[in-house]
Image (cartoon, rainbow, N blue to C red; front, side):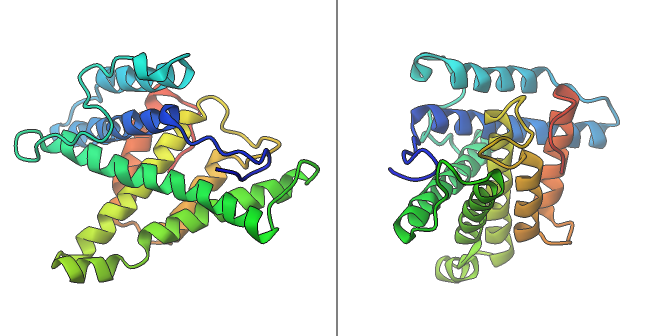
Length: 232
């Protein structure tokens, strides 16, 4: 695929595996906060730390497919919903997160085709604007027609929209993991916090909906582990 400042978009197994593991980390981060609140206990981050370290190991490994997934299913393998509902939930949300990331890159290609892509010599502000444009495209693509899908499949439209919204927020969690420790503005990308804020505006607006609440709980646990992380 061609697109972006350097003409080539590399959306590969490394990125997919990090996004996959990050989805399970996001679910665990949400559980850390929710369980502690429900039980009146302190948060236990042990499993979350293991999953985050696994994601970073995959990100940095010479051969990411050789890194053991420590009991997680392989990408694209969906655990049984009856016997392992939480693993199934995380795996399904990983699909939406991966789709969001792919759609972001597709829009870079569209900018190239339309002659609106930034160039090597473009100022950072132009590069940031294109990145935010691609985020917006991916977000709206995932959200649009949710009601039509719900009607076609006879599903609850509110639940369909919530699942898609959670998938987008899990993509933001994965983006945060992929960019670990480099969350500020760069010459080519706006700060992760800016991207999260813009995405939240598209998904939830000013409302505090279920999907945003889950995301906020997940990022709250993530902040316990990585104190300088962007926040919802």
